[in-house]
Picture 1 (cartoon, rainbow, N blue to C red):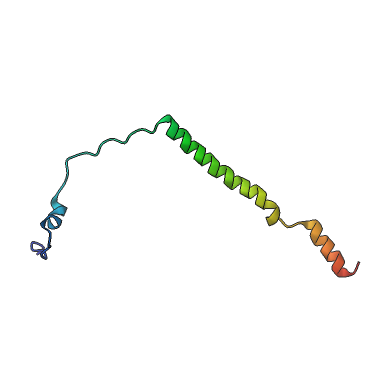
Picture 2 (picture 1 turned 30 degrees about the horizontal axis):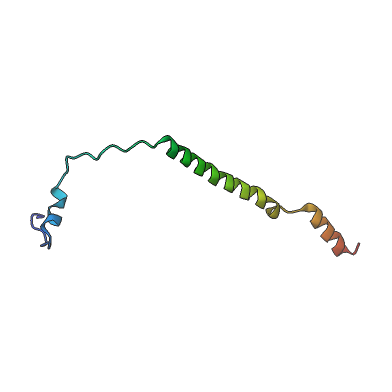
Amino acid sequence: MFGRREPVPFAFLAEADRFRSNVAPPPRERASVGQMAGRWLLGLTIVAGLVGSLVVGMPALSTDTATQTQQSQASQGH
């Protein structure tokens, strides 16, 4: 039923699904102390930037109640 396939221009493509390699990839190298320190420093810099932008941006996001009461008194004619 599935014995015959369409012709493929390259024979290695037709046989690629039957090929299994017995060669294991080399083990990954461990990161050096400098690389680990650099990754930690980069992560801390990113977190500090996000926290800093949140702290700086919070006053702009908060609603000031004193300003609202002054506006409401002015609109009432006081």
